[in-house]
Image (tube, rainbow, N blue to C red):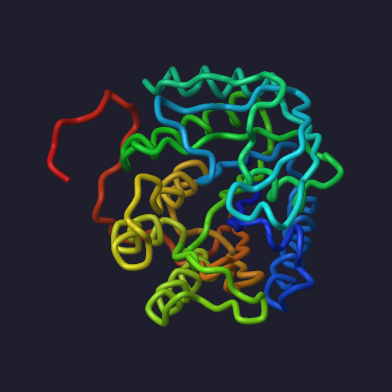
Length: 300
């Protein structure tokens, strides 16, 4: 079994930098700790991070600096302070992943230079899930223009690389559920989900994931995007990726470790473990994709 654990975590920095300012942020911080324990127990020897907060434009970028070192300041919440980091990146696997992407028709490149701006989401995930760099990591961007087909192919390319390298990977998706941030500064104690509609949809998603229904959630991604996501080029495609790399089915043991407001957004820490149980396969509406053959000139 090559993918031994899957995690969905928020990338906004409050649970890392100021968890004590809000009980919900502290619960998110504590849930990261539980997820870290789950990863350790899974036997994973690689952390694959797919961050919706690292947008790429042309193709897919892969971090390949074996020891990126910098001091990060979030572009929105710079008032929270600096985040110094040194990470352990599996540069050899990064090259393997690049080759697997290209073999499926995707444009991909590695990045490796001092000071490359690693995104807040990846920084938060690695600092809280892998604080001692016990596991080597791979960090992958989210192409802002990749449609469902390309995103699914990317997930399958990641699975190819994991299988080909003989690794046991924990696949971590960094993102939010509903993503409506407050546009005015709020007192931490006043944080809440931006709207009742957002909260209801968030809880429906978490009900599915808590039941291990990953592919069902992926199939609903277009509806979720319409209901609780601000229209923008980086959307809820993370579920397409997550399902493609872990396995496009519902046979998982799901665990919702926390769900809290995070500056208006819906933030959750969720774990999925492959299982022979789960709710089984459903009759899905959208087809599968194996090879990326370029953009198609079709109407939205």
